[in-house]
Image (cartoon, rainbow, N blue to C red; front, side, top):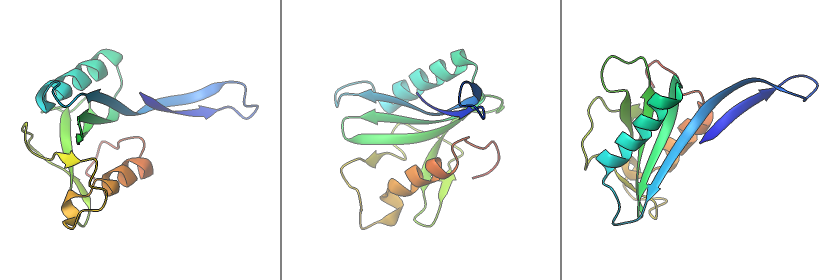
Length: 131
């Protein structure tokens, strides 16, 4: 879990903190992405956090999600790069929106994961509204 902390003026205590990113990694033969998503969601549900970004990794493959506790439908929806911007998909399946960690700059811009990481960096509070 990566969290954001705001310290008081004297730098002697934390005045605010919130989760930014939760990562779950498996070996290439480990759980599939549905199981990884379920594990991430269970941890976030149990933690009481309202919103958080999540990354699941399996071998050299990875998938990104945004968790929103109060959402009436699926609390975790996958993120994808359209090649022009990062969006949240309304549906999820085991074999969709999976990116290759080793393909840093693919010819198909929609398969690039760096824009998703940039978006998470620029919006650490995982805003509840549209991306």
